[in-house]
Length: 156
Image 1 (cartoon, rainbow, N blue to C red):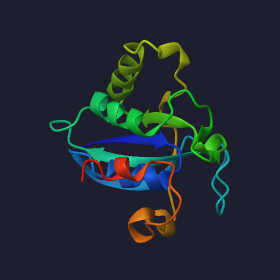
Image 2: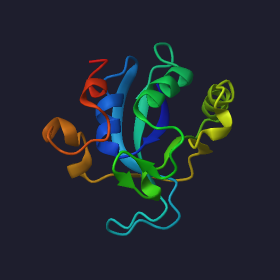
Image 3: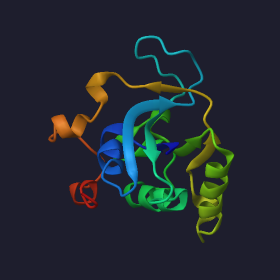
């Protein structure tokens, strides 16, 4: 198994989508690459993300990028759907340099590369979200989600 951290706006929908993908074995809602210590919901600088454990024999980082681009506006800065703010930025984070190289290669091959606002950065820190945020849409399917329902369960 390998681990990558995927940010695509509000983590509720991103987790619901990612957990349906082939080769994804485990997901956890959390926050990545913040600029301050976490103190009781103070997530300054953190991006909402999904810790994603995957089997690279089944799904590659490039394929995970393809999936991410199905659910985000890749040109939007700090905004996905109705959610606005730094914590809703999009990105790929990893402790593995090869993951970052693969993600960057995916972006560079796109004709719209210069317009894309998706971060590709080393993971500097990660904090798991509170239990109330884990698998939130599975427990409360009527909660808000910026991802269209037809995409949320496309790979189920």
